[in-house]
Length: 459
Ligand code: MN
Ligand code: MN
Image (cartoon, rainbow, N blue to C red):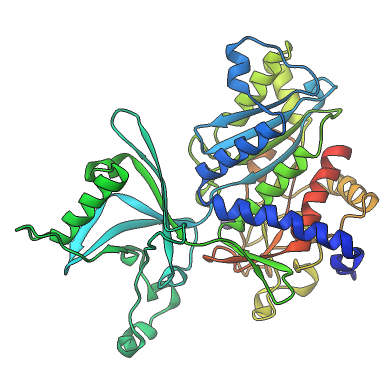
């Protein structure tokens, strides 16, 4: 099965539109490097589109009606958006789901120490990373510090061009003889991902005078005490903005495109609709990279609770109706797929790989070693999607995550499938997945957004 490159479908003015859509996307991933930053920005954009906070509707005991737009914030780390449809909820939802957490390096709870007149932060990495990729890069610190009185300080250090950056050092090549003999997984060890943040002492008679200086700066500039690290969530991420990639500017290089590329396109697709037959939902969750666990992950009851609340506000709640609603739903579980990399053809099977420029990717299954742990989507459902994509001239491709028995991955699809709904994995192909700087194709980003719109309108 041969497929045309999606760029070739578009004339000059449409190509401009693709580039302009990607400008918005680049801004999103440049500004939103933590799940919280994503939630804040999504709320900002949703309110502009006429979405209101579900919590205030519940409080004011207002009712919902078709055409209403609401969002439900889960602890500032996950969010669900709903566009209420004309038909009873029981007929099922049309759901777009993606995750807004990305691999990174988290600061430990007791992180600060001094060694040989340098101050460092001890870390524990989050998600699957090749640790050697994260050294010698300009890194930034993002996150929250919560004071004992509940005050929340939002921290971003390293993004403004006048900000300092921080980072993790690596051994000079001259002394790396033994290191270079090690296996890649051991070249940089997890416990050695220590972030260098200072080297200037203050004039005190203290063996930790450099650390004391940092503590003073944290106190004066950010109102943070050393004890406050206990109740903080600080994430070390690559510093700097997303950029155009390639001399033809056809690609985007940026941090956290897994899976903010699907989150952004899902959100934008939902914003394209002002009315719908069946209710549309967009759920953007945390913790996918570590197993979708915790209150803000997909395994949490949050989404189910949100649907129950909405049903109640429509004056039509019952446990049975809630179950029917979820069972009758259709979902695109949207996550990135591995793009074919001509530098590493050995891990891919060419007929069943995702390629840049070939549009939205559908993965019938992800999983590994005999489809293990994978949501294997029904062909009946895929047939419907195929027709919708073709009718709307959406470029799409099907893919597996690498050769059989080469590796594999997971998404949130199988969790939603537990409600007995139709779910398939879909999304955007990415190069450098889980590296500090990931790459996507602009036309794929655009095509995927269009595909989501077609799904919401026609499934
Ligand atoms: Mn992902
Ligand atoms: Mn991932």
